[in-house]
Length: 101
Length: 266
Ligand SMILES: [Zn+2]
Image (cartoon, rainbow over all chains, first blue to last red; front, side, top):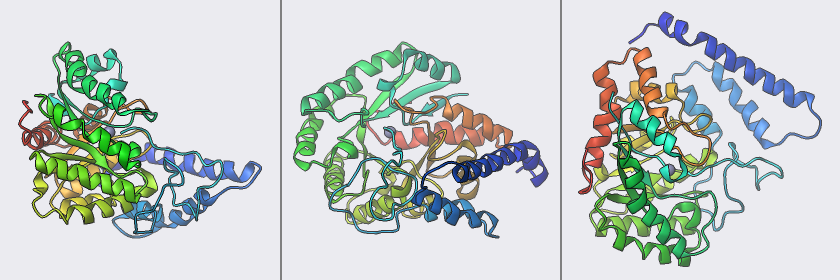
């Protein structure tokens, strides 16, 4: 198994790049006109998990971005998925995701 | 390096992709039935799709020395109308006689509706009636965790189900322990901006070990990389996984699971 130093050598620049991209995304949302929606709220709520001293941050972020309900729904209001649990109904204009796979 | 691509939608890919897979060492590709990117207007559309999967696609693959196998079902995205879904399911038994059909898949949930769940359970019963393995799709993004839990609860009601003959695909960090702890196989899908990245999939392998796990590209008509599995193998090498460890995940594990289908030949 590689050491911490070896993982840093292999991936630090990539992680730094992703962190800057995330920061720039948040700046961009602030800078642009109009209202944001529940997705940015969900992202902001998940961000502190990055700094939590726990070994399962990825799992915790995925859980934070998951639909917390437990019962099957009578009918789908829309197809596709948005990446964060909608508050009640899908927000207008949210870009759905979900290919074939 | 030899490997098996256990989940790819080759009907949506070009002949160039078959050549790339062959150059990368792909020996067999397995294609689950799924959504075409648009809803088909009749059961006849599925009949033709099943013919494409069982007759046409194996010939395309064979030109590059790759074996092609398929899984059949009506996908969850088009299964929310139970009458239509049952009409399509009625076509499946005829195709189960084809030598390259592996089992029932990819079945599962999409938006976690009651109708999707009912049709999922009827597919499970169809697989049990024919003693065939099952390949399961789990929902996208925010729907995945709920859908995985619903399907695991549902499967627990099938007392005669052999869990070693079921693979639950598209797992991520929040669903992989639920699947493995219950005794099922788990598939990790390597996508550019959803599901697992190469490094996250390798993290999961390091944390849980290679038992009952496989990697796939699930390449289709959307944003996907048909070479994701060999790319992940290279990343494993960079992260000091041995050649034997890599071969286990990209070749032996899929071979061992798929060998439970009478039609599979490595
Ligand atoms: Zn698929």
